[in-house]
Image 1: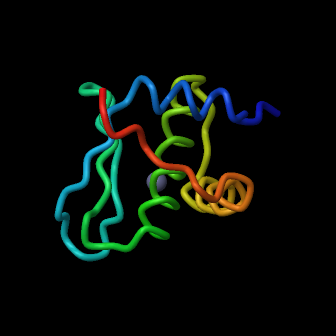
Image 2 (image 1 turned 90 degrees about the vertical axis):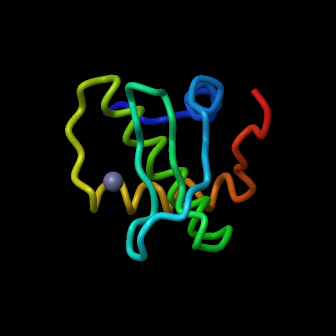
Image 3 (image 1 turned 135 degrees about the vertical axis):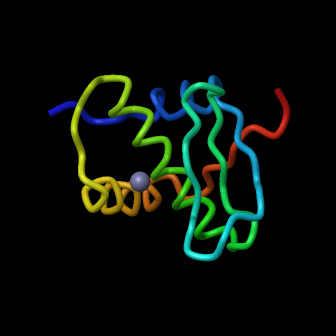
Length: 94
Ligand SMILES: [Zn+2]
């Protein structure tokens, strides 16, 4: 099984803009593949934003490879990755 590596995460962060927007409650974020943008809900704190960022990065990674993953699988993988990369931050400037 193909596993995401740190270099894959960095590559996605290089290619995608990360934006913070006030989305409705209960919505943590989403990927806009056409615009190469990851949107995070500005309502939530850093923990949730980081977890969501990892979650959306995994969506990009698997979508690019045509690999099917359920939301639950993506979620638990995002939580595991966050333990390994606890200080993940999007690049602020592009
Ligand atoms: Zn998802």
